[in-house]
Length: 192
Image (cartoon, rainbow, N blue to C red; front, top):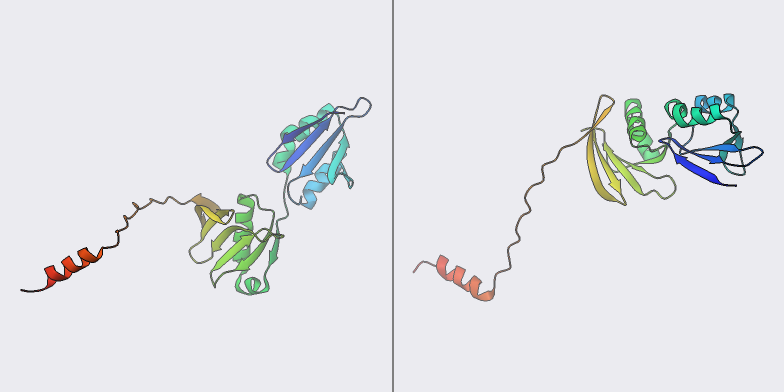
């Protein structure tokens, strides 16, 4: 039995070439919403607990549906886990903004912690490694990879736009003065 893997934005799917009953498997990359699960069940998919994927007997129509239409119909329930202090500081609009940010960056499960009154960090739930920070005051988002700043964005009425930053020219470091140069400076400054 051969399995071919295909990748989509919201899921991966696998096609097998078994002779009697070829199968098609859908592996969700996050937590599918109830409506997406209903769509999958309506098309004959059942959740296979041994493989942790949705499985169905393959038909030509089903293959075309998964390859072309399913990605547009896939919706996610974004799961946010809050630090108790962060939950006290966040307001309902802020939570919606964080959900929009998570959806934009394809983060479907995250842990929200607080750095200060306006700055919140979005982390992976298990490892708590930093994915992004969000400033609720200035509406700026800093995206991190392996705890190093990658890019900055601005949240503006539901839209996330990349920030354009002109880098300043690096400043030249002055070499430390030698003892002779220090003496020369003192002598030059001294009135004779």
